[in-house]
Image (cartoon, rainbow, N blue to C red; front, top):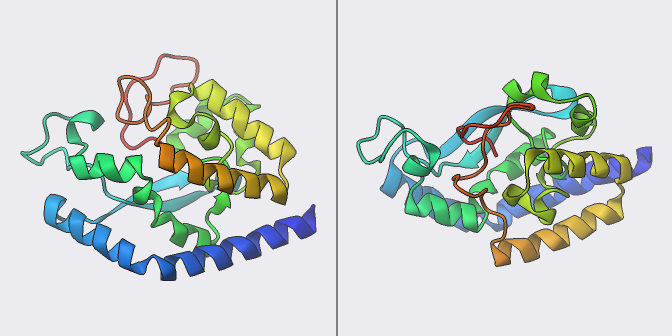
Length: 211
């Protein structure tokens, strides 16, 4: 399994690096569209929990207006999500800057999605096992329901991935991701721009960019 993990890291760095070069025109076009329609900043940066819960800064394209922006209809995520932002999320174009996280080693192409640092004490011991592997741009939960799943369902799929990981599974997930992106499935939970905030066993309230 150790050799497979070294191969996984090599493939991650190679594919993500080549991807960033190959999609440079797309990155530039999206950045310009955000700058024109939403202003600065173009990138969304947020501290997330990585391997073994260690923090790192996640990069995405910005999809929401600042709460103080007069164009925002309210303070909630759904009130600040722009039409461009909704399109970027539906097509997963907002995730493209995360390839830089993959190059850096903060993330893998495939693994459990990195979530907010404040979630760490809210996991059960079993759910916390999702941090036994490097987080990913896409993952088993993302191709099996994404944000249409409940938090417990997501975490169960994440732990299943930890227990069954191999390179063939990663390739399968990458192939399934392409299909899911084209079908635009599971983009948000019902009534939310993305997902309600994970509050352990308590009902969730909407959280800012919690996906």
